[in-house]
Image (cartoon, rainbow, N blue to C red; front, side, top):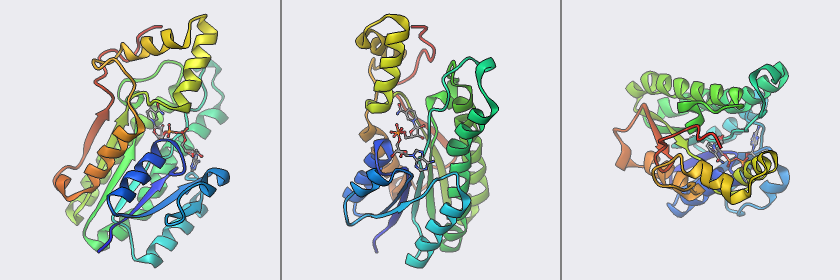
Length: 252
Ligand code: NAD
């Protein structure tokens, strides 16, 4: 029988790589995204829904459609935004809440609606995308780091609550991922600090043993493994895919 996966924010970036990897592994791929133009660009054989992960009505509608289609084997609650980049005293409550809404409420809502389906099936894998920022902190990104830390707390609780029902939960913590999001960070920091893009890259990369950023495919490979039977007793784990962070604050 074909397994079904839902990847939130699956139209681009890490989520897109996850969806492609699950597709290659033979899954029935469902994605959500908030970006209609990006949704138009996904393969026709995927089921794509426009939904804001922080909107309960949107998420309820997506999961009702999944239930009608016969349920869900794996959930990748992947959506996340960086939020404000500011000193703590300059962060508006509105911006704090906006960042927490997507990163944390989004993971909560996806888990809330996936759990009953998986419990009644007696099996399932929930994979939450956290971040090394959630493990170590991230200067000038307080709401992001706090929300990603909370995602780990959510995952630990899901693993305890759902384990007796045969449902596993794990969190992946990506390090800096090659791609448009990090290129934006590199360009901003290069402009602020009067450095070249490559100097800023090296500054970040030198905080890892492997000396480089990761690729979206590395995160996707881990997600497919965690969803698979090969990981049948892996639950409650925080798994960094980051090239081994040794210095989370390289002080560029
Ligand atoms: P991204 O900024 O490239 O965005 C990917 C997708 O998220 C986009 O298609 C966007 O439309 C969608 N999206 C944004 N807000 C949404 C919402 N409210 N509802 C539904 N979809 C929404 O992000 P990414 O780099 O692919 O990151 C994916 C995940 O990995 C996030 O949780 C992010 O925090 C985490 N992460 C990323 C990095 C990195 O360096 N890129 C590092 C660590 C963790």
